[in-house]
Length: 89
Image (tube, rainbow, N blue to C red; front, side, top):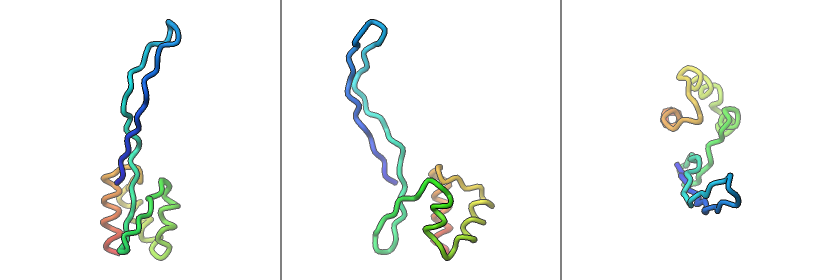
């Protein structure tokens, strides 16, 4: 899991209708990576079809597991379940 934070600078009010905004840190969406035995990480795609293409030999079994357990690729807890299943293959 890779988390990132972006710094947004303050903005001055350029007229009466727009208020001044203070500087802030904004958390970006987390990215998830799969790491193999060679410690090479691949980003987990956000689409199910692209994820299945990473495992061409086991596509049918993985798709069945995703449908059976209602796995959402955007949720961290579901991704943990999926990776645990992938480790058993």
